[in-house]
Length: 173
Image 1 (cartoon, helix red, strand yellow):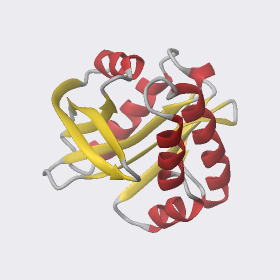
Image 2: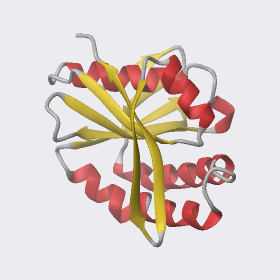
Image 3: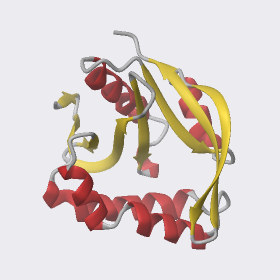
Image 4: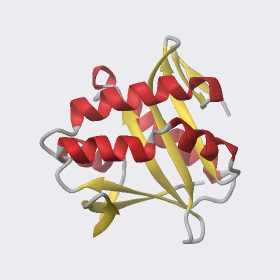
């Protein structure tokens, strides 16, 4: 599914774009997460989540989707999502925008894209996890119709923890 409006294109990540996406993720994380999580945890999570082999393997799966947001042809954001064990529920596992494109409505476009795309497949609810100290992301998700449902504290390896809010949003058909 390609969603293209006024210079913004949202479409599936192509295999030959994996390195570009990884570089974008590193730029975003290294600019945004200091002060929220440690530099060591940032690097650990980047290596775990954005290794080219990991992304390539996920692109081969039928139950994980990676989409990119291009602004005038340049990759400026992305999302990855999958079905959960809860019926009719999609988890947005990743949703990131370059700092220059934040607070301009592009995050909402990515959320709407996922909701529209997956509603046709029976999705009734979106869920995501967001660090409890990531106040700007929490505000953006609240603005886009998510609500805080619960808290989650889990060990992710390397001696690191994720201290998150689990947020949910109903998807209207």
